[in-house]
Image 1 (cartoon, rainbow, N blue to C red):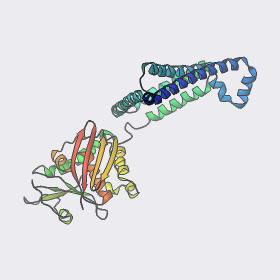
Image 2 (image 1 turned 90 degrees about the vertical axis):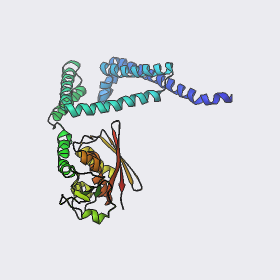
Image 3 (image 1 turned 120 degrees about the vertical axis):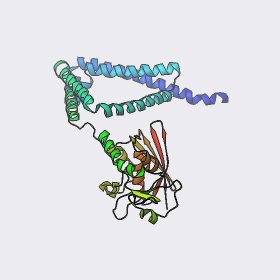
Image 4 (image 1 turned 90 degrees about the horizontal axis):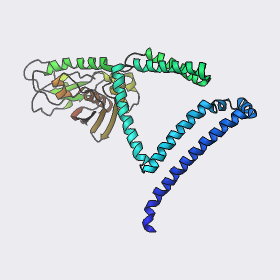
Length: 344
C-alpha cells in the first residue's frame, strides 16, 4: 500500500480535471435548456426583460452557440490532454514561450510598420462587426462594440508613428557621441569614470588617455582639461550622451534606480524594451532587453561603453551621487548585461 502513496496526488489531479470537464458539459446542457425555455415560455422572457435584460442577449441563439462552441473546444482540448497524458503545466509553458516570441514579433512589427496597419485592421473589423450586428443580427451590444473599434482605430490613425523615442531619437543620441569621438580618436583610451553632477552642473566623464591609467582622486579628475592643450594630458573631461539627465524634473521625485532607467532607456530614448536592476554592495548589474548597441564611434564604445550603458552610468552616478565606472558589458542573445562599480 505504501508504494502507491506517491501516485495519489496524480490520481486526485486527474479526478479533478475529469470533474471540471463533466461540469462544463453540464453547463452547456443547461444553456441549451434555458434557450429552449426562454423561447417557449413568454413569462420567463417578460421577467428577464424587466429584471435582467442582459439575460435576453446571453440566451439568444447566437450567444448560446458562441458560448457553447467555445466551451466545447476547451473541453475537447482538455480531454485530449487527459487521454494523451500530457501535463497542463507543460502545455502552459509552451504557450507562454510562444506568447513571448509573439511579443518580440509584435514589437518588431510596430517599430517597422508603425500603428497605421493595426489601426486600419481595427477600423475595418469594427465597421464589418457594426454593420452585421445592426442590420443582420440585430444585436445592439455587438453594434456598440463595432462602433468602439472604429473609434479606437481612428484614434490610433491620428497618433504619431512612434509614441516613444523611435529611430529619430536614437539617431540624435548617436550623433551626440561624435563630438566625444573626435576628441578621443587620436590616442589610446581607457575605461571612463562617470562623475556625479555638482550643484546642478552637468555630468562629466573622465577618460584616461594612457594605456596604464594612473589612480587619481575625484578632485584630480575634475581638474582635467576638457580639450587637448598639449601632448601630455593624462586624461580628458568629456560630456557623455546623458550629461544633462540630472535636469529631468521627474528625477527630483523619489524614483528608484530601476524606475529612472526605465523612464530614460525604455520610455524616452527607446534604446531597449525592458530594464532589470540588481545591486550588490558597490556593484550594480543592469540587464536590458532588446538593447540597441549599434554605435559608430569605436573610441566612445571602448571608453564610455555602448549607448544604453552610457546612459545607465549617468543615471547611476546621479542617483547615488558617486563616481561610476563601467566594468564590462556582455551581449547574450537580445539581452545586454552591463556591470558598474560605484567608487568611494
